[in-house]
Length: 117
Length: 112
Image (tube, rainbow over all chains, first blue to last red; front, top):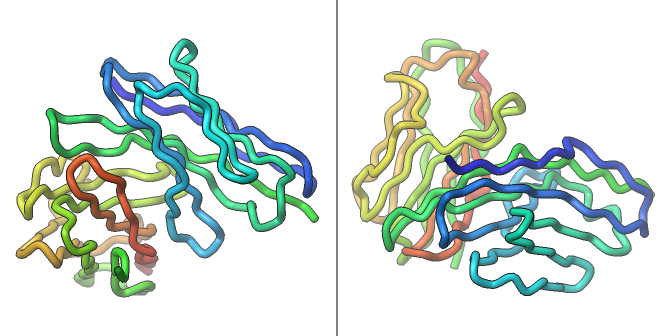
């Protein structure tokens, strides 16, 4: 069965600190996608990144970086030099590919990130 | 593109009343998903449609919930009769085959 675990319920750091959000997944699929979404206090879900299971290259986008390691089934997200605007709930998700078409997302419980000024 | 549009943004209703949530997916997307978000259970998939056809409704809590997608540009999620435990944020998302899921801003439902 597919499962996504975000063990950190809440993280609080002071602005400018680096912070890593953990995501561990379980799947029997050999082909799958992993996602991170951000949910700011305003409530909407904002897509951050999608990574397919064949691409283990780490990705950096500005202050955001992602570390995908199939050996440990982890897809961790790091924010460097955090800012107050990064305060949000962050969700990790796994796609459950059904055939060659549509998929549904299996969600982690989310990590609430609080950045204090 | 305007993105996925949900209405209303907020809904407060009395227990027992019928509630209808609406979603307009992104044009060209062929799949639509309804999610419910609560503090206790996080994000749960309720139902999804592919080319307007319901594919998996196993997440629908009970018979009080129903969803329709009469055409490619519109879907509804109906709760009848509503109960206080239905209070949650309901998200609609759309995607094209193999693509990214884009979410609406959600409908915050409060049943009193």
